[in-house]
Length: 254
Image (cartoon, rainbow, N blue to C red):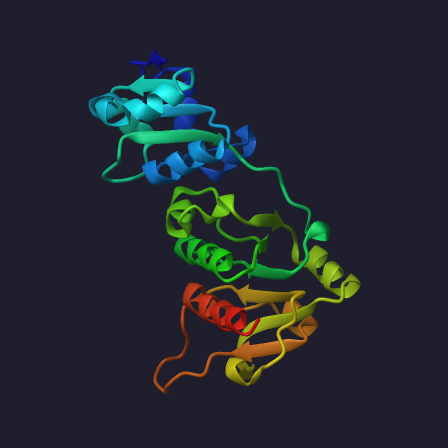
Protein backbone atom coordinates (compact mmCIF):
# COMPACT_ATOMS: atom_id res chain seq x y z
CA UNK A 1 0.00 0.00 0.00
CA UNK A 2 1.16 3.50 -0.75
CA UNK A 3 -0.07 7.06 -0.41
CA UNK A 4 0.10 9.64 -3.18
CA UNK A 5 -0.35 13.29 -2.24
CA UNK A 6 0.47 15.12 -5.48
CA UNK A 7 -2.10 15.74 -8.22
CA UNK A 8 0.82 15.92 -10.67
CA UNK A 9 1.82 12.32 -10.00
CA UNK A 10 2.05 10.46 -13.32
CA UNK A 11 -0.31 7.70 -12.21
CA UNK A 12 -2.88 10.16 -10.87
CA UNK A 13 -2.81 11.98 -14.22
CA UNK A 14 -3.22 8.69 -16.07
CA UNK A 15 -6.09 7.50 -13.84
CA UNK A 16 -7.90 10.80 -14.46
CA UNK A 17 -7.57 10.33 -18.21
CA UNK A 18 -9.39 6.99 -18.01
CA UNK A 19 -12.68 8.89 -17.88
CA UNK A 20 -12.19 9.39 -21.63
CA UNK A 21 -12.64 6.57 -24.14
CA UNK A 22 -9.53 7.39 -26.19
CA UNK A 23 -7.32 6.91 -23.12
CA UNK A 24 -9.16 3.75 -22.04
CA UNK A 25 -8.35 2.41 -25.50
CA UNK A 26 -4.75 3.67 -25.36
CA UNK A 27 -3.94 2.19 -21.95
CA UNK A 28 -6.26 -0.82 -22.13
CA UNK A 29 -7.63 0.11 -18.70
CA UNK A 30 -10.90 1.33 -17.23
CA UNK A 31 -12.27 2.52 -13.89
CA UNK A 32 -14.79 0.57 -11.83
CA UNK A 33 -16.37 2.88 -9.27
CA UNK A 34 -18.86 0.82 -7.28
CA UNK A 35 -18.06 -1.05 -4.07
CA UNK A 36 -20.53 -3.87 -4.69
CA UNK A 37 -19.18 -4.55 -8.17
CA UNK A 38 -15.58 -4.32 -6.96
CA UNK A 39 -16.33 -6.83 -4.18
CA UNK A 40 -17.83 -9.19 -6.77
CA UNK A 41 -14.73 -8.83 -8.94
CA UNK A 42 -12.50 -9.66 -5.97
CA UNK A 43 -14.68 -12.67 -5.08
CA UNK A 44 -14.43 -14.02 -8.65
CA UNK A 45 -10.67 -13.61 -8.54
CA UNK A 46 -10.48 -11.18 -11.47
CA UNK A 47 -7.33 -9.11 -11.59
CA UNK A 48 -7.37 -5.56 -10.25
CA UNK A 49 -4.44 -3.39 -11.29
CA UNK A 50 -4.85 -0.73 -8.61
CA UNK A 51 -7.33 -0.01 -5.84
CA UNK A 52 -7.80 3.71 -5.21
CA UNK A 53 -9.14 4.77 -1.81
CA UNK A 54 -10.27 8.19 -0.57
CA UNK A 55 -8.31 8.59 2.66
CA UNK A 56 -11.32 10.13 4.43
CA UNK A 57 -13.22 6.87 3.90
CA UNK A 58 -10.33 4.44 4.34
CA UNK A 59 -11.74 2.83 7.51
CA UNK A 60 -14.81 1.61 5.60
CA UNK A 61 -12.70 -0.53 3.29
CA UNK A 62 -10.18 -2.19 5.61
CA UNK A 63 -11.20 -5.72 4.64
CA UNK A 64 -10.83 -5.23 0.91
CA UNK A 65 -7.63 -3.22 1.43
CA UNK A 66 -6.13 -6.20 3.28
CA UNK A 67 -6.98 -8.47 0.34
CA UNK A 68 -5.47 -6.04 -2.17
CA UNK A 69 -2.78 -4.48 0.02
CA UNK A 70 -0.07 -4.35 -2.67
CA UNK A 71 -2.42 -2.76 -5.22
CA UNK A 72 -3.89 -0.14 -2.89
CA UNK A 73 -3.20 3.58 -3.27
CA UNK A 74 -4.52 6.02 -0.66
CA UNK A 75 -5.40 9.47 -2.03
CA UNK A 76 -6.39 12.75 -0.37
CA UNK A 77 -10.05 13.56 -0.98
CA UNK A 78 -9.31 16.45 -3.34
CA UNK A 79 -7.13 14.26 -5.57
CA UNK A 80 -9.53 11.32 -5.42
CA UNK A 81 -12.28 13.69 -6.61
CA UNK A 82 -10.26 14.51 -9.75
CA UNK A 83 -10.45 10.83 -10.74
CA UNK A 84 -13.97 10.02 -9.60
CA UNK A 85 -16.87 10.60 -12.00
CA UNK A 86 -19.66 10.30 -9.45
CA UNK A 87 -21.15 13.28 -7.62
CA UNK A 88 -21.25 11.47 -4.28
CA UNK A 89 -18.48 8.90 -4.46
CA UNK A 90 -18.30 5.86 -2.21
CA UNK A 91 -14.58 6.51 -1.92
CA UNK A 92 -13.32 3.45 -3.78
CA UNK A 93 -12.26 2.91 -7.40
CA UNK A 94 -10.71 -0.16 -9.03
CA UNK A 95 -8.42 0.26 -12.03
CA UNK A 96 -8.88 -2.79 -14.24
CA UNK A 97 -7.67 -4.14 -17.56
CA UNK A 98 -10.16 -4.20 -20.40
CA UNK A 99 -11.20 -7.71 -21.33
CA UNK A 100 -9.81 -9.40 -24.43
CA UNK A 101 -11.83 -8.57 -27.54
CA UNK A 102 -14.26 -11.27 -28.65
CA UNK A 103 -14.30 -12.26 -32.34
CA UNK A 104 -17.74 -12.04 -33.97
CA UNK A 105 -16.95 -15.26 -35.86
CA UNK A 106 -16.83 -17.16 -32.55
CA UNK A 107 -20.31 -16.07 -31.44
CA UNK A 108 -23.30 -18.40 -31.59
CA UNK A 109 -26.61 -18.85 -29.82
CA UNK A 110 -28.64 -15.74 -29.14
CA UNK A 111 -26.88 -12.55 -30.15
CA UNK A 112 -27.86 -8.95 -29.45
CA UNK A 113 -26.60 -6.30 -31.88
CA UNK A 114 -26.44 -2.64 -30.87
CA UNK A 115 -26.46 -0.58 -34.06
CA UNK A 116 -25.13 2.91 -33.23
CA UNK A 117 -26.81 3.18 -29.80
CA UNK A 118 -25.39 6.46 -28.51
CA UNK A 119 -26.98 6.89 -25.08
CA UNK A 120 -24.92 5.26 -22.34
CA UNK A 121 -28.04 4.58 -20.27
CA UNK A 122 -29.65 2.71 -23.16
CA UNK A 123 -26.50 0.66 -23.75
CA UNK A 124 -26.28 -0.23 -20.06
CA UNK A 125 -29.96 -1.20 -19.93
CA UNK A 126 -29.64 -3.39 -23.01
CA UNK A 127 -26.53 -5.14 -21.67
CA UNK A 128 -28.25 -5.82 -18.35
CA UNK A 129 -31.33 -7.19 -20.12
CA UNK A 130 -29.16 -9.28 -22.45
CA UNK A 131 -27.64 -11.03 -19.46
CA UNK A 132 -31.02 -11.48 -17.81
CA UNK A 133 -32.80 -12.84 -20.88
CA UNK A 134 -30.21 -15.22 -22.28
CA UNK A 135 -28.52 -13.11 -24.95
CA UNK A 136 -25.01 -13.91 -23.76
CA UNK A 137 -23.36 -12.55 -26.89
CA UNK A 138 -23.39 -8.87 -27.85
CA UNK A 139 -22.08 -7.17 -30.99
CA UNK A 140 -21.63 -3.41 -30.89
CA UNK A 141 -21.48 -1.16 -33.95
CA UNK A 142 -20.35 2.41 -33.17
CA UNK A 143 -22.22 2.47 -29.86
CA UNK A 144 -21.47 4.06 -26.48
CA UNK A 145 -18.39 2.53 -24.85
CA UNK A 146 -19.28 -0.31 -22.49
CA UNK A 147 -16.35 0.70 -20.28
CA UNK A 148 -17.70 4.19 -19.55
CA UNK A 149 -18.73 4.64 -15.94
CA UNK A 150 -22.36 5.36 -16.85
CA UNK A 151 -22.70 2.19 -18.94
CA UNK A 152 -21.10 0.09 -16.20
CA UNK A 153 -23.42 1.55 -13.56
CA UNK A 154 -26.60 1.21 -15.62
CA UNK A 155 -25.65 -2.34 -16.69
CA UNK A 156 -25.19 -3.43 -13.08
CA UNK A 157 -21.83 -4.93 -14.05
CA UNK A 158 -23.23 -7.09 -16.87
CA UNK A 159 -20.16 -6.32 -18.97
CA UNK A 160 -18.32 -8.91 -16.84
CA UNK A 161 -20.81 -11.64 -17.74
CA UNK A 162 -21.29 -11.18 -21.49
CA UNK A 163 -19.22 -11.91 -24.59
CA UNK A 164 -18.93 -8.49 -26.23
CA UNK A 165 -17.53 -7.90 -29.71
CA UNK A 166 -17.10 -4.76 -31.79
CA UNK A 167 -17.41 -4.66 -35.54
CA UNK A 168 -18.45 -2.60 -38.55
CA UNK A 169 -21.71 -2.80 -40.44
CA UNK A 170 -19.88 -4.30 -43.42
CA UNK A 171 -18.33 -7.08 -41.32
CA UNK A 172 -21.67 -7.85 -39.69
CA UNK A 173 -23.38 -8.10 -43.07
CA UNK A 174 -20.70 -10.56 -44.18
CA UNK A 175 -21.30 -12.62 -41.04
CA UNK A 176 -25.04 -12.69 -41.68
CA UNK A 177 -24.45 -13.86 -45.27
CA UNK A 178 -22.12 -16.65 -44.15
CA UNK A 179 -24.21 -17.89 -41.23
CA UNK A 180 -27.54 -19.64 -40.81
CA UNK A 181 -28.64 -17.24 -38.07
CA UNK A 182 -32.22 -16.01 -38.09
CA UNK A 183 -32.01 -12.21 -37.99
CA UNK A 184 -34.64 -10.06 -36.26
CA UNK A 185 -34.70 -6.26 -36.23
CA UNK A 186 -36.67 -3.95 -33.96
CA UNK A 187 -38.70 -1.91 -36.44
CA UNK A 188 -41.79 0.25 -35.81
CA UNK A 189 -43.13 -0.85 -39.22
CA UNK A 190 -42.53 -4.57 -38.65
CA UNK A 191 -44.94 -7.33 -37.77
CA UNK A 192 -46.21 -7.69 -34.20
CA UNK A 193 -43.73 -9.25 -31.78
CA UNK A 194 -46.59 -11.20 -30.21
CA UNK A 195 -47.58 -12.76 -33.52
CA UNK A 196 -44.06 -14.03 -34.17
CA UNK A 197 -43.84 -17.56 -32.83
CA UNK A 198 -40.53 -18.98 -34.04
CA UNK A 199 -37.47 -17.72 -32.19
CA UNK A 200 -34.67 -20.23 -32.81
CA UNK A 201 -31.78 -20.66 -30.41
CA UNK A 202 -29.34 -19.43 -33.05
CA UNK A 203 -30.64 -15.95 -33.75
CA UNK A 204 -29.64 -12.31 -33.86
CA UNK A 205 -31.68 -9.36 -32.58
CA UNK A 206 -30.67 -5.94 -33.90
CA UNK A 207 -31.68 -2.81 -31.98
CA UNK A 208 -31.01 0.44 -33.80
CA UNK A 209 -30.00 4.02 -33.18
CA UNK A 210 -32.31 6.10 -30.97
CA UNK A 211 -33.26 8.55 -33.72
CA UNK A 212 -32.69 6.63 -36.95
CA UNK A 213 -33.43 3.04 -36.01
CA UNK A 214 -31.66 0.09 -37.62
CA UNK A 215 -29.64 0.97 -40.72
CA UNK A 216 -31.23 0.29 -44.11
CA UNK A 217 -28.59 -2.30 -45.02
CA UNK A 218 -29.11 -4.30 -41.82
CA UNK A 219 -32.88 -4.04 -42.10
CA UNK A 220 -32.72 -5.44 -45.63
CA UNK A 221 -30.53 -8.31 -44.41
CA UNK A 222 -33.04 -9.16 -41.69
CA UNK A 223 -35.33 -12.17 -42.01
CA UNK A 224 -37.90 -10.69 -39.60
CA UNK A 225 -38.77 -7.08 -38.74
CA UNK A 226 -40.71 -6.97 -35.48
CA UNK A 227 -42.48 -4.22 -33.54
CA UNK A 228 -44.10 -3.83 -30.13
CA UNK A 229 -47.82 -2.99 -30.41
CA UNK A 230 -48.69 0.12 -28.37
CA UNK A 231 -51.62 2.40 -27.66
CA UNK A 232 -52.12 5.37 -29.97
CA UNK A 233 -50.49 8.65 -29.04
CA UNK A 234 -47.01 7.32 -28.31
CA UNK A 235 -44.66 7.25 -31.26
CA UNK A 236 -42.07 4.90 -29.82
CA UNK A 237 -40.27 3.56 -26.76
CA UNK A 238 -36.60 4.28 -26.17
CA UNK A 239 -34.07 1.74 -27.41
CA UNK A 240 -33.29 0.36 -23.95
CA UNK A 241 -36.93 -0.29 -23.09
CA UNK A 242 -38.00 -1.68 -26.47
CA UNK A 243 -34.97 -3.98 -26.79
CA UNK A 244 -35.53 -5.26 -23.26
CA UNK A 245 -39.22 -6.01 -23.90
CA UNK A 246 -38.35 -7.94 -27.05
CA UNK A 247 -35.62 -9.97 -25.34
CA UNK A 248 -37.93 -10.73 -22.42
CA UNK A 249 -40.64 -12.02 -24.74
CA UNK A 250 -38.20 -14.15 -26.73
CA UNK A 251 -36.79 -15.57 -23.49
CA UNK A 252 -40.29 -16.54 -22.34
CA UNK A 253 -40.79 -18.61 -25.51
CA UNK A 254 -37.73 -20.84 -25.17
